Length: 203
Image (cartoon, rainbow, N blue to C red; front, side, top):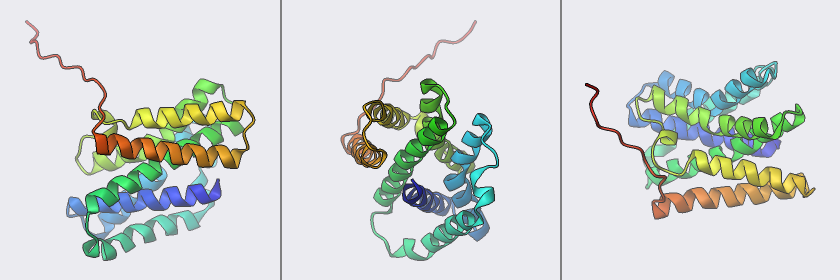
């Protein structure tokens, strides 16, 4: 899981930096958004589950990694084409990886299955929510896109494979590939959830 975690925090730090760049933030702002995006979801999960100490406080190298990834993004972003596609890819990778990590943490703490799924989703989507709120955008998870539902599907598939005693490495790889494919297909094909619209005024 360590490799998956490093990929996740790096990808989310870069997506956070790109989001900050779209809002014309200074270098400090970029670093803060990168940090919150990469490590915010895990922090919220640990606080909810009572899993202390919070992971990154015991591994300062993770802080150096996410801030470095965010600042490096500011140097290379202007030389990249199709930044929107890159942002969506990085965000999708972070979503799937963090969902798997959140499930694994809750399983190790022997929480019930419903809590394991919520833990995975909380880890997967919270960093993106914090990023979007701080960048004054409606969070992706609250739009019609398949986002939280992708996290839910990944968590459910991971638990199903664990139930059938599939090796953790294999189940992680299958869930990562399947979840990433689902998220990217949802973006490409513009799959949407039904929306609720209520416009009637209260008298």
